[in-house]
Image 1 (cartoon, rainbow, N blue to C red):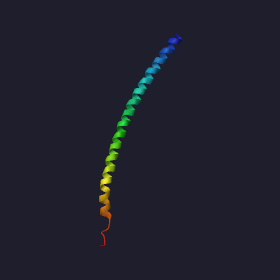
Image 2 (image 1 turned 45 degrees about the horizontal axis):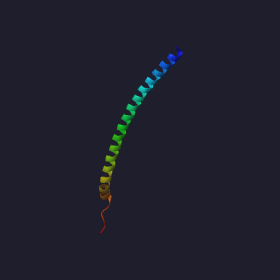
Image 3 (image 1 turned 135 degrees about the vertical axis):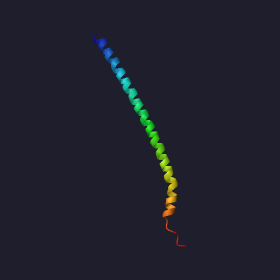
Image 4 (image 1 turned 90 degrees about the vertical axis):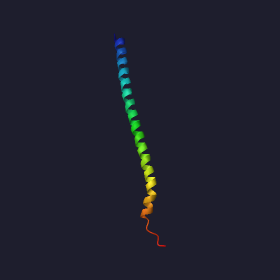
Length: 66
């Protein structure tokens, strides 16, 4: 009986472990999607700043005294 109990306990632990791995996989996938979204947003923001920076620089320069 002890061997059968150990086998059943091992199977139960394996099932629980498998379920936890599935849950963690889902969470990692969600985090990956969120990270990709943040990266895309950051790239758009950096691109915007790169385009706007020259315009801001031109506006803030004092007029030349020539």
